[in-house]
Amino acid sequence: MTECTEQLELFGRVGRAQVSAEFSGGEISSDGGGALLLRQTERRFGLLAAAAKCLPDDRADGRVRHTRLAQLTQRVFAIALGYEDLNDHDHLRHDLALKTAMSQRHAASSSPTLCRFENAMDRAVAVGLHEVLIDQFIARQASTPSELILDLDATDDRVHGRQEGRFFHGYYDNYCFLPLYVFCGEELLVSYLRPANIDGAHHAAAIVKLLVKKLRAAWPEVHITVRADSGFCRRRLLLWCERHGVDYVIGLARNNRLAALAQPAINAAETRFEKDKLKHRDFAEIHYAAKTWARKRRVIVRTEHGEQGSNPRYVVTNRQDAPATIYDAIYCQRGEMENRIKEQQLGLFADRTSCSAWWPNQFRLLLASLAYTLMQNIRSHALAGTELAKAQCTTIRLKLFKIGAVIIHSVRRIRFLLPSACPYRELFALAAQRLAPSG
Image 1 (cartoon, rainbow, N blue to C red):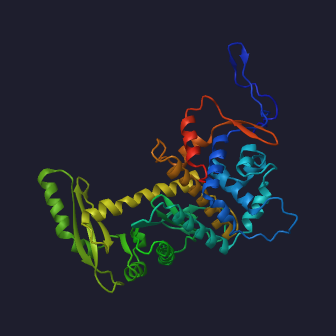
Image 2: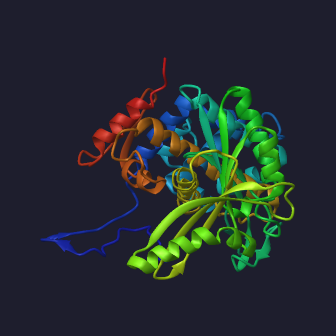
Image 3: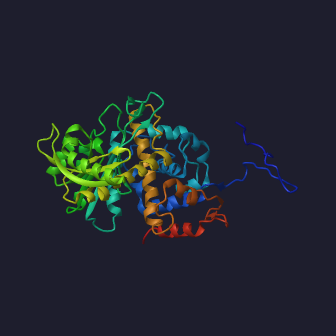
């Protein structure tokens, strides 16, 4: 690849003027907007300050140049700004916008230093950071919620090396990890890295137990519903929810016994289709017990018949809402969680689990989770009611973070000169104002 060390005259002319380029502009950053908004968000909510308290540090006193908070901030801010690799920090560590966001003047950590930082993490860090995510979620609520819906889902995190804990997964047809995510609406509560040689619901009941305990400690009267697809329809999870007053709405894989019980409703949909040749969709309910269940449970049946034939779906629940409400208004809404997982993996690089050891990879997953939480704070608090209120992380990055800036600094002042022609200047100013620390 061409080294950009000299003036590049590759871009033709504009009239009689030659167009050239060189990397000699000095203190100019392509991330001026993002650095300022991320700094403002951290000042407002203190997410990374709380997270840094969970990180071990056995380095010799007096020889530490970069604190754990500075290293954590550097990594998380860089991920939010779109830099996925440690190698990016060889140059990025000198970016004045990033250093300003980190509240420091000297160069940030190099990529080898950050590599050692990641490899120092362990199980206690993973537990502590999850507690921070949940505590921050609770603290951000302006009032006591009456109901919370916890969405559980697993996804594949493909790997291309010989990382510890990686296995071949037949469904995904690749070597991967199988992380478990838990969201409450758009708020991320759990990102738990797991090997791929397990059941998709592995440890789901234990995680729900810990979450419910934490949430009820803050809000004793809150009504909690667990929502998931059929991969989480496991006896242990259902029993625990029933014994502890937690509702569930969970998909149920079709089988011959279910089909036999639902056959009258399925036949009715087929009869209506044969009559007018229009797709017909309706709801019914049955009571069904799998072999491992001690008793029958309520199952919602969504019948559908069209040109492609019958397409029934089943959902097991202990809620008493009408079948249509259970399926359409509650169960189907879990699909929105898949968009949040895509944000994690595609926009915030949660699948960059390329470390050799297990716990550094879990830490990388949590770094992406912290970056997501910062972005979600911006989306929910700074962009509410605006055109970007529902924007994905990549859109927020493109429109508000990637605003170039000339930075002029002295001992007493650091000025970010943002472009006069920026099309989102009013929205940027509104977001910055809303994120200003209270008091």
